[in-house]
Image (cartoon, rainbow, N blue to C red; front, side, top):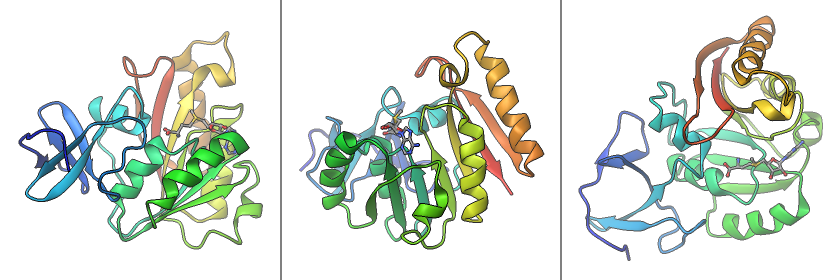
Length: 223
Ligand SMILES: C[S@@+](CC[C@H](N)C(=O)[O-])C[C@H]1O[C@@H](n2cnc3c(N)ncnc32)[C@H](O)[C@@H]1O
């Protein structure tokens, strides 16, 4: 099953485990790796290493992030799923919930479908995050919107999706250089937080993801 023995312990965040500095999630698809991550077993349970250089959500937790709005039965709208690295860890964290994985690139989508096949709570959707109305017929309730699309107007796209699905919580992975390569990343992050504030959301956390991701931040919002 796993590769080695460690002392794996729960963290304050439901569904997230640690061993020393390493973060892990409980593998919903035992024996399967998604991106070459290491597998470990303890007491008959298999865990997957959650690598902060590969996943901005893991980077956020390693940087001391305080907000983790996922519950075991949460329904998550994940915009910008790529081939499923972070979405697969979110799926591990919400085993009784669902992760709607939206990806615009057909090439990434093909790989995403393979990852979703082993995980019944991941639903792949070939779609566009900027058009939330087009997603509505596939998506039921949403408890959390998680967005990582690395294109212009990230906060605006996120705000529309939060509203369209009446989500109480949201997490926005923001890439400063996708907005304006000439501006200071901290100014881009502040502007995004202000826009979300004007749109009626409370920005509960904003963390720069250095050293794991250069010029990226993760914002957490509540209604
Ligand atoms: C940085 S990658 C996402 C990585 C992924 N969130 C993870 O952590 O595993 C950004 C992805 O967003 C996708 N994307 C960009 N614009 C999009 C849009 N309008 N709708 C859906 N996906 C989009 C890109 O094709 C790319 O796969």
